[in-house]
Image (cartoon, one colour):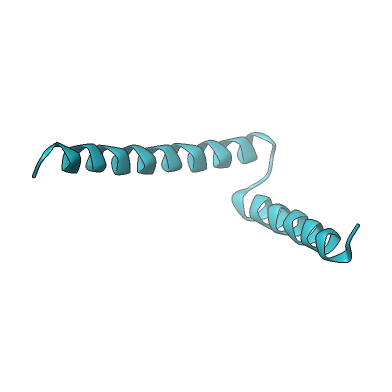
Length: 59
């Protein structure tokens, strides 16, 4: 195991930590606005579907 293994391991751990922090921050901000995570996910899905419809409609 040379130094590239340790650099790769640190990079993977760093990315994992960053994603965990981002998701926990999102959940916290959703709660701060008075929404629970299921509502927030539903709202995000609805917005995504609406934008997808606009894209395929050519507007």
